[in-house]
Length: 149
Length: 128
Image (cartoon, rainbow over all chains, first blue to last red):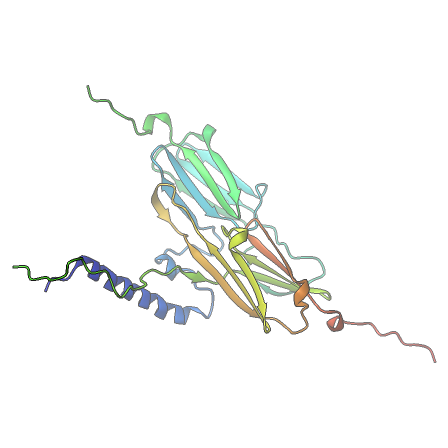
């Protein structure tokens, strides 16, 4: 009998779910970041990033909880991008610490983008602890619409 | 030859849940002084509406759901949709009615004030 592709797909989906469940049984000792993200591990303390290519610009997001725009430093040169930041401990005065898990060390992360970006037109904003950067590509590498004669 | 008799195509009768949003524990700092316990939890990307803080029967549950949007073809993605969830046991001395929380820059700050009877008290010794 023919097995439909959707059935196969569903079967693999269920297997993934089971796998995730079994993994999470062992991951509860500590925080379970890592495996759930497809094995993409970042060294402790470096913000995780997402990079999207939207045709005429790149969109870069980074997790920077607790940082204000004064704590962050962005540098762009051609296709080289550097994000660095300092974290201040927000431990209140006169309190006894029970648990300190949040990172307080400064960090730097560098990227080499596939093409040059226009450093003058870069836009960066912070939203709920996520840094969102829009980096327009230089005119020379932007996709062009061709008209057919 | 096709000998199927159904007039309409069969709907899937057993929907299977095959996708699950990963659940992770947020990183927290916990501080205490004579008046309150202060809990700072990192919830980057979670909007205020998507955070719930629940104190029930000595258990404090913090949850937050983050929904990310894709802004094009992903070159790489190290984080995405996630559910933050963490449960703590809180001492009975916490005044539940006065618990307050604020969310700023992706950090949830939760103030758990101690009830008056639980605060340390200096006892004055009277001269006889």
